[in-house]
Image (cartoon, rainbow over all chains, first blue to last red; front, side, top):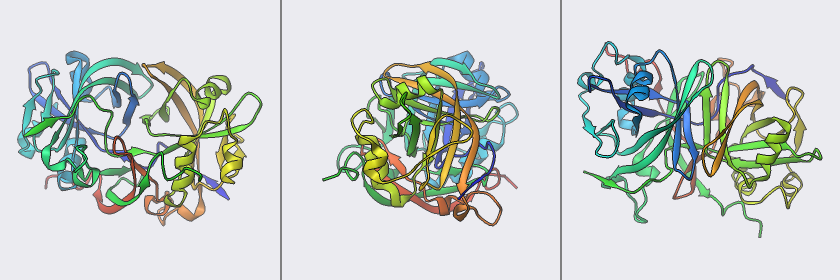
Amino acid sequence: MKKSIGAKTIIYPTPVLVVGTYDKAGKPNAMTASWGGICCSKPPAIAVSLRKATYTHGNIVQRKAFTINIPSENYVREADFFGIVSGKREDKFFATRLTAVKSDLVDAPYIKEFHFVLECNLLDIIEIGSHTQFIGEIIDVKVDESVIGEDGLPDIEKVKPILFAPESRFYYGVGRYLGKAFSIGRQD
Amino acid sequence: MKKSIGAKTIIYPTPVLVVGTYDKAGKPNAMTASWGGICCSKPPAIAVSLRKATYTHGNIVQRKAFTINIPSENYVREADFFGIVSGKREDKFFATRLTAVKSDLVDAPYIKEFHFVLECNLLDIIEIGSHTQFIGEIIDVKVDESVIGEDGLPDIEKVKPILFAPESRFYYGVGRYLGKAFSIGRQD
């Protein structure tokens, strides 16, 4: 028997996306968001939703670009900090001692220490309600060689991304391998 | 040093969302999608992107409602099957012996055996490219009592959702607890 818990914004898992932007003065900022995901294959695109009050919101509207940086488990403190503090009041790169690197493809900085980075140009802005959804075309994905597996693709077990559980607000790591998609469900 | 791997649709993790719909004859269908995520807090809303060719795409356009069902690890085969086979050709509930339950809130069925279900009414349709993004307002969340923790909230460790790693196409479970959000990053 199922129990109603009301209209809550919960799915499992949600990602921990650190959005990299420049403000109008060229100061880099990083903000953590969990409302987002891949939204199109051609063009390759990602959606991330932000409240209007965030510093990053204004930066994306102005610069029309952002990066998505995937923190690994050992940067869970920095990733959480990026979601607590506003770039209006604090230089978050200075505070965390992480390094903002200027993308040579889009007008946004990425985080050097994070192993997995998407560089995006703004494609569309959708006003939904409390949140604005920014759709970014993925121009390139840049990864550290250390997280590339034997097949030449990034390996989630090496990237060690963080999962977020909404409402309870807990962070988790990636667990055990369950099987291969488009394969394990085939009926033979 | 970062290496470019091209404009790929990868973030970690992506969710495994099973979309429940009725077709125009009232036949229930279930389809697995990983391009999606929460997209707004007020109204509570979720976005899921589907190719036009899918049966579910037509169902949502027609019925203006869908459910999002989160499979647990022990339904990884069924979840994968829902992403391989088209509802145009096969009755996926009959094939998997899972049970479609008519929602009393929206015009869509949910999956009885899955512990975590969102009931959604269509709010907006965004054409991006290969994929159409359906934005659904979350009308209610229904969960099995067995996955509710001591704090009254669903517990991700009991829900045991599946993660999907794009490109390599591997499924994973949830791993170890890393910390509390909006807390572990505070600088004291």
